[in-house]
Image 1 (cartoon, rainbow, N blue to C red):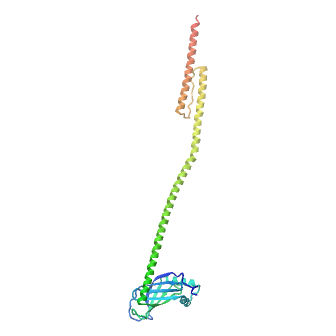
Image 2 (cartoon, rainbow, N blue to C red; image 1 turned 135 degrees about the vertical axis):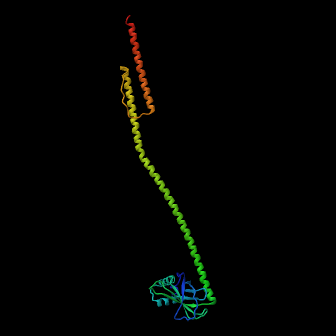
Length: 291
């Protein structure tokens, strides 16, 4: 039964117990009581040891076997499995509502003093009551040393866990900061891509407008070129005439204006040369007529 019902998972339980004298069994002598600590642990899977001391006047101890815990469960009247009752025992000792009731003679060092450790898990639930025996001299020193060393080890473990948790939190904060920076960079890249896509979407409209403008200029140039050709032909047959040109609303480049001016100059020179040739012919004919 001990092999099946053991304390492998019991662990260590520390706490403070409020010391009180049992008014029914204590004598009238006044002995001050100091705050007390208790320590429950399983030195091996077959037993649980409970220590309680004020590090001054009184130290108590008891070893509980599997059989003792079964009797305790029967006295309390709690059903359920073995593991459930062991968990209930640990929870009651860890609840913070623990008292150390002392009874017997109120004389320091008296072997007649005994104590009862009472733990209540919650109001309305059955309470755990463990009778403890007083120890003195070497056993008392050993008990206090065991409790002190266990407290120190528990403190070091808690400190180590706190350091690890702090490091883990720091790493998580660094990772979070890095992820935020990455998200900010991604948002900036997305904003840049969105701006570029809007510019690309507007470029075709500009290209269409530019193409339309160039077509208009080209048409105007072709129109002006054909008009100049017609003007040259008419000037060659009919002589110089005054023509009215309409103002064009389309804009032309400086190079096109220069080409246009050169063509007009050539047309005017051609017209003048033709007029000079006709005048010379008339004078020649008039000179020969009297003969």
